[in-house]
Each structure stands twice: as C-alpha cells, then as structure tokens.
Amino acid sequence: MIDETTGALPVEGVPAARVLDEIRGLRAADRPTHGGRLFAYVYDPGVAGLDELAQAAHAGSAHVNGLDPTAFPSLLAMENALVGAAARLLGGGPGTSAPDVVGSVTSGGTESLILAVKAARDARPDLAEPRIVVPVSGHAAFAKAAHYLRVALDPVPVDPVTLRPAVADVAAALRPETVLVVASAPSYAHGVIDPVAEIAAVAAAAGVRCHVDACFGGWTLPWLRRLGAPVPPFDFAVPGVTSISVDLHKYAYAPKGVSVLLHRDAGLRAPQFFAYADWPGYTMVNPVIASTRSGGPIAAAYATLRHLGEDGYLRLAAVTRDAVAGLADAVRAVDGLRLLAEPESTVVCFTADDPELDLFVLVDELTARGWHTQPQLAYGGLPASVHLTVTAAVAPRVAEFGPALAEAAAAARTAGPVVLPPELLALAGSLTPEALTPDLIAGLAAGLGLGAGPAPDRMAAVNTLLQAAPVRLRERLLVEFVGLLQRPTW
Image 1 (cartoon, rainbow, N blue to C red):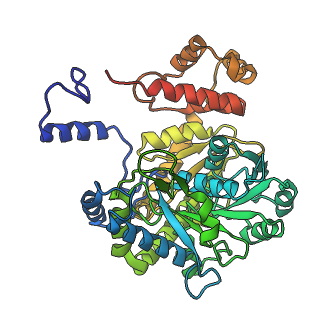
Image 2 (cartoon, helix red, strand yellow):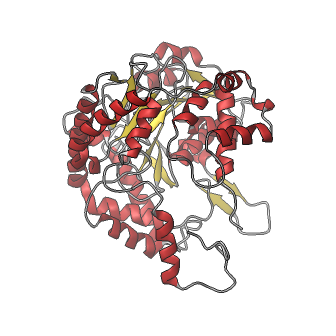
Image 3 (cartoon, one colour):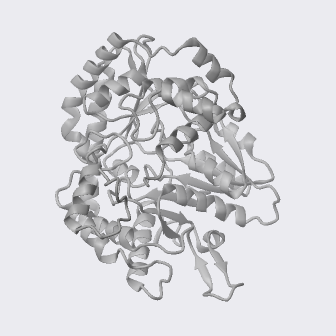
C-alpha cells in the first residue's frame, strides 16, 4: 500500500528497494497479466524470456524522444521498420497492389482511429459538417474521435444473427458530407469480420475513404490465413481500402502501447500531420497526437518482432487457434449457454438462453474461481454476452476452463438472477442524465458497493443496473462511478 503519511511525494526520498516493494504490493491487487486466466486487456504469448527482452529494449530507449527524428535517428529507424513490417503483413509494399503504403506508430488503437478520422476530415476542408459511417459494432473509439473532432457519426445497424452490417445499409448511410466509411476486421465485441471488400467498393464508388479497423485482428488474421483458415479479404489487397490500423501490443505481443496506422499512400496520410510555425518557439510538426513520445514502447515492439519472427508468430497463431476451438467446445458443452458467433478469429463470445442463468452472476462466479472474463451489456436486439479474448498463453489452461465454466454456471443457477429493488429499476429506466444529482449518485453508488477505493469483487448488481438504464444514462452513471474511484491520495 502507499504510505498514507507521505504519498507519492515524500519530504525525504525513499530507498529504491522500498519503492519497488510498494509497487509490488500495489500490483498484488491487479488481475494476473500472465498465465492464461485473463480474457481481456492483456495479450500474453507465454514465451519464456520475451518480457525480459522487451523490458531491456524499453529501458534502453525510454528517455529517447520521438518529437524530433533528426535528433534520435534510432527511433526513426525502428519506427520505419515497424511500419514496413505491418504494411507487408497487410498486403502493402513492393510487388503488391499497394506499393506506396506509409504509416505512423501511435500509442494505441484509439489514437490510430482518431488520426484516421482526422486525416479524412482534414482532407475535405470544403465540408462544414463532415460525417463518418460506422457500423454499431465498430469500436467505441470512433465515437470518441467523432466527439473530439466534431464530426457527425452515422451508425449502421448489424444483423442480430450474422453480427455484421448489411452493405446496402452502409450505402444508404452515405451522404455528400461523408468523409470516411469504417469496417472491422474483426469487430472487438464478437470477433466477426465485416464484409470489407463490399464496403470498400461502396465507399470507392462514392469517392470516400475506407478505413479498416484491424487493431484487434490485423496481426493475427494473416497468420490464421496461412494456417488454412478461410479469412476473407480485408487488407490493402482490397481495392478501395485507404487505411488500416493494427495494434502491435495485441497479437504482436509487444508491451503497451504501440499501434500502427497505415495509409495506402503519402497523399492520404498528409492531412494526419499537424504543423505549426506561428509562434516564437521551435516549429512543431507531429505525425501523431503526442509531441513528446518515449522511445521505450517502440524499441520494445521492435525487439519483440525481431525475436519472434514470422515462424514464431505462425506458431503462436496455431496455438491460439486450437485454444479458441477448445474454449468454444467448452461453451457448447454447458446447457443454457450459446455461442453468439462461431469463432473466426481469436474471440469466443457467448450468451445465455436460460433465464435462470444470469450472465453477470456467471461472470462473478468465474472471477471467484480465478477466471477473468469481460461482460458485455445487451444492445439493441443483441443480448448480453461474455467476451473472451484468447491468446497463446490460454492454450495450456483450456482443459481447466471447461469444468470451471460448468461449475460456475451451476453456481449461478443456484444463486439465481440478480434482483434489484423495483423502485431502483424504475428509477434507472426513467431518469435522464441531467436529473442526476450528487446525492442521488452517491446513494446509488453506496447501494451497489461503489465508492473510494477498489471496485467490489462482484459486479453483477452494477451490470444489471447499467443494463436497465438507457444508453445516455448508462454513460453518465459510468462516468460518475469511475469518478468515485479516481480520487487523489493526499
């Protein structure tokens, strides 16, 4: 724990060993980042020695600043190498139909998506009210980009069975002000690949850019295809695809945070840059949002790719593919559970058809048994579901997961669904975000076990309340609840 008498800034410095002990003590409360029991947020290949290599590379370049590539050519060389590797994997480079691909390394998928939207918006300065077309299964970062950049978001529904947008609906959503159309490969929530070729064709016919969000799957789908999986076209081999994002801190297994944003050519990338000379300081030019950038993550990613190589990634993809199949079989074996989509990437997503089997209680029961999954609330015509991001480190645990899932499902049935007071449910269904007062928020939070300090171990009641709330109220409640957790330590 942090020493409450001194906080992060003590009067007198603390010995290094004690500081590290404090950090280790704090980390003991975290979810496990290794071992194959956490199905979200982290990507573990289970490769011995890889962490140590990445940490050493990170440490060696942690104080290098990406603000000025002329001052630190090592960082420029590693960044260009990462962009080249990603471009080659995703259908670009010499000898392809996209020989002039360029790109930038960003801090993560959200920054890559924001920059893709910025480039599309700034390429059309003639439009007073630019718009983007995004399937509702597209990552929430596109909504964040639209909010930050003052771009209108036109959502396209997905089929409740296929979980994909209809190409006709995408075409119908296009307007003269549309600057970007989005497709996912795959969508994060369900792990299904949008009809990229058809969507890109519709965008190209309208003279609009098409971005493929492959942050989640861009570094694994090509290897799965080499292993014989029927991966549909989704990269620069598809005419009309103008940009692609791929996160290296996901299935390239680099430390966080490293993503790559690729454009089919330099002209498409140019509006992504920000340059400013109208002040007395240095002339600023930034290819990404940040100015100062630590070289640590880039060096760590470079070391990771160099060490694993194509043969390493192919092997890891094969192990992950087999783990996905095993986890899907485990879900099929439990009465009342159903795969929401047949796995076609590295996601297993399932729901419950049995009204006595509360998915949120099931998630808590799995957590109590050491398995950390990601609950997803119902949306539109889509039911609540449980998302499993599967990595290579999961493979040795697959045989354990099936019995644990069956045991957790039985315990969830015994416990029964979460029952909230009728007046609380009525309140959640009728309140508007504007009607929330500090006292009301505090009362709701206290009733759900939320407040200063860590979140409660069991979250089923919180998720049930959030699911009962309309989307805008749900957003406001989440902001307020997380705000209660994020308070300074004085």
